[in-house]
Length: 88
Image 1 (tube, one colour):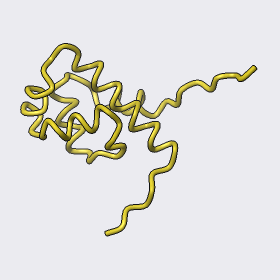
Image 2 (tube, helix red, strand yellow; image 1 turned 180 degrees about the horizontal axis):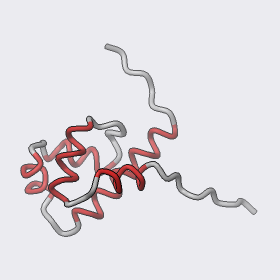
Image 3 (cartoon, helix red, strand yellow; image 1 turned 45 degrees about the vertical axis):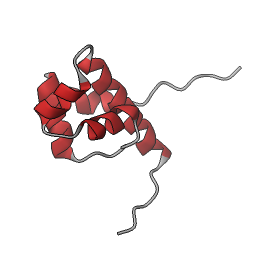
């Protein structure tokens, strides 16, 4: 199966998702968070770093549940684009 390249918007959304999950995890261990969510620590690391820009929904749902994040809130925050900076 050939995967199409990600669009810049998908890459940005993946980076926002990773940042949000990393912030929500805070001081918690990445290993324990991943194990509690039923995913590999490497998967969580890739998602948090933005290297997996389009993770599977069940994976995100499991991680969000462990972190106490609402999927509605997560969806809203991840899909809000960064404000454009004015170049002077």
